[in-house]
Image (cartoon, rainbow, N blue to C red; front, side, top):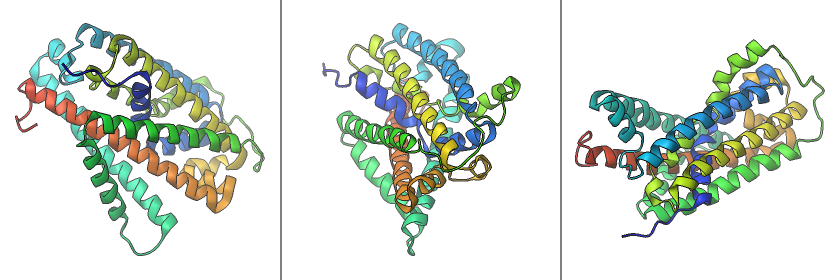
Length: 304
């Protein structure tokens, strides 16, 4: 029997890794630009809602610890084969495959904008994807090492940029909208800033003391994301006009340039690169495990 290799820190890095994506940085900037710092309240509500989801999945994982297809195993037991196939293939496999392409394209366009030159932007995406695929073929150890390093650098960089932005460059109100109905409506945007922590479930068989470490790691991951994003919102207030932030397609680059000029822009481009690497690494590993498990359940071709 193989010894379980992953601990609490690995679960936290996996939970953080998929959630903190480049598109989430865009949503964070747009949400803050619409409400001001009261968007933090919308994020708190969204975090608590996602914690209830994580708690439910953790209970299912404790009841069915030998998971083979991640959420597919739970859905199959509850609803049967056809709803499971629709929800997993449509809601997870296809959706996440396409979203990874979007994440990679945002990264490649940002990198091409900063680096310049005549290299097509898709080349950067291709290189990164090949490297991640080759690394994941080395097994769960390599996946976990990449995830730990990238998640640490990603969270550390965003928190550092948030604290660097404690000076004041732009004079503007903290609150644009304090109406609770509008804050509740923006919770739908904030909700997307926390989706993905459950990707720790498919690798739970590799986690030591999974009954404790899997739910605790996902909860810690969600809370760390909330703190990091709250610090960023406060930094946005000090350095970027709310209107420009709401309209920007790359608010993290806008903020980085406002704080540190070209150095800040390059720094935030690297943050975007880390976010994409982390997202792709988590998705490649987790979707592979899900497909493998569904194949064992006779719900996917045996090639998986």
